[in-house]
Image 1 (cartoon, rainbow, N blue to C red):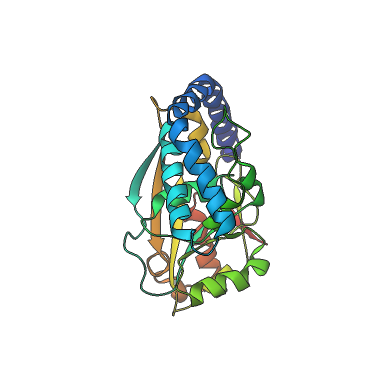
Image 2 (spheres, rainbow, N blue to C red; image 1 turned 90 degrees about the vertical axis):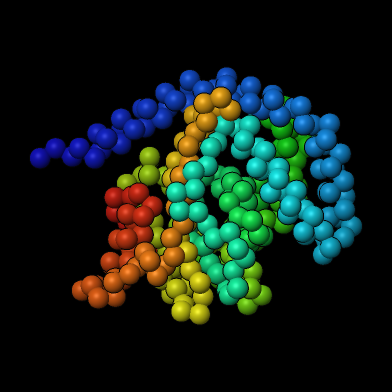
Length: 268
């Protein structure tokens, strides 16, 4: 019997590579269009960097709003069209809340800022501090401003104290369910932290957030945007009836695998 899934993966990868190559110059033009905003962006950015250095505690709201607006514009010019199939809750949570998602894109925390109408603590990688404000202006970077996104992206066991502190302070928090970047396009199996289910406490509001198509956004441009479908589902809805299964834990991991568009999972 032939394994058609591997053939399908190879074909999907071939299509993705072809799409990236075809849109290369369109993406460069999109970065060039953003240069129009540079006379406004540059002084604002440098002023916020200075203010954040002087008065860290009082600059959060202003700095976070700036990052949210910047990345909204960045993804607009980058050719990303968001489709809110099942959107994230638009009202600030009234109880401790976790949004579980997969790490499937290097700039994921930057994209996630555009999904919420309120501040959410996001796990960010340190290398994002080196992210330039424009492709053609690489010597002005985000530096310490990027820390306003949330908390340092570490393995789940190391991040738990920070996550718990955020929940205690009623700060909605995004938590990765996998350690390294994986995508349904390139990977069949979804690595899942075996401790994830232990965070599903009845006193905590839990959601699962899938940004489907995010790994293909570099195939888009401002004129022909890539589509990213947002699927946000509560843990109660996703796991409804799972406790009645013969193996409830396996059933929940299987549902996570399907929700994020993978074929199977492995615990890490």
